[in-house]
Image (cartoon, rainbow over all chains, first blue to last red; front, side, top):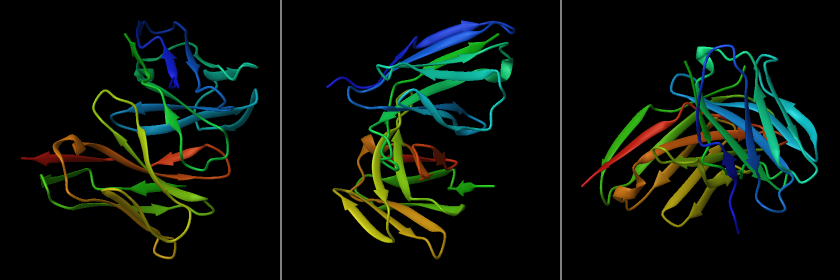
Length: 113
Length: 109
């Protein structure tokens, strides 16, 4: 079956712009979570959605937001981009409550100039 | 706060055994997971310990001791393709994972 699909894979933005990233989970998975990966901070949890409801949110400013649609697809949005937002944004899906076994997409690499 | 510490880098030769440690300061978690990530790739799930003790999956084994706040990933019969970054992570009551600092494993011929 198809894996987790993230689009776009690469994008370049300038400071102050906003960006929307998309994630299509594995068919049947209802939980989608987002992570930011940078060389300095490692993998950090952004937020998690289950059945269109945000269940958890990480310690990121309000510029970072997300949502999940009825088909479990998810989007995350970053507004007023800053240089420090340059990172690999990873989406992961699961059936929900699997306590550790997540299936990750290849990520969207965002560069902010 | 919660933190999981790992050695930054480990090197070994093909065929050898290597252990990657993970020490943590967190509580109330469901279990400890391990993920592998090759350069430019997605993290892929390796193992999960819900209970104390050893879990074996082929060449990989993982161990958890909640009393010692410690876990490790053991890789046997190392192959060149095992060169990658390895992350431990704790999970709570949802799919929120707190990841460790990551260990870069380099396998030499």
